[in-house]
Length: 161
Length: 161
Image (cartoon, rainbow over all chains, first blue to last red):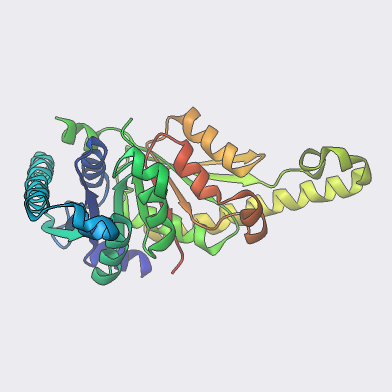
């Protein structure tokens, strides 16, 4: 009974994508290995936009003119488009029947990813292991470690070999 | 091309099972969500036997008579059978076409799991997040954290909700 339920009901799979090769590899893994051929399934491509400078370093916000902030916002939007286009190329290659939804978040990636998984009541979270840069990772710990500890659903951590 | 390769070739999936409910839930997740219906796939059920007392506490080994060690070994064998029987009940429920292989290791679970994944050149490792007890986890860190960091293949961490 449990087995039948698991196979037939809709699955919501969140894939955290970013500018890294590894996150595209995570998306490929998801399309090739999870039940992505099922038209009942929804694949949520989640991209977290870098935080605007004024919210990352509140105390230092005055140092940046509106021009700089505006140009960074523009860069962020370009990045979203570029990542989503690359993701589209990957899932086109797999000719998936799953329903694809694109979600763009803003803020601290680990919090945005965990909150999105919770809000959507996702069944699975798929992500690369090294997202969001070496420097930040060393300072703040790995985003994937954090998410694996804090979300309730199964988490798939994919490395680019 | 990559997409076709991913779908058609044999996949070796290692599922780390132990006496916890969570590891049986991880096995269920694997059977319900990964491509377990593919007869080309091999599902490796890996159980790691608790270390015998003399190898865990070398210095204190003399404290235990052969009888005590023998009885613990016997208990370990009983545990293997009990866990494998529970696992069998789970995969029977899913009527999987995948080829099932049982592997029993001995030693430190995190090392045995990582070494087995490497030796078998497994494609995916699936495990519960809280295996091998709260006390040991607090002292030594989570087995799943360690494995997620040290194996090269994708790792699925499943929680019992």
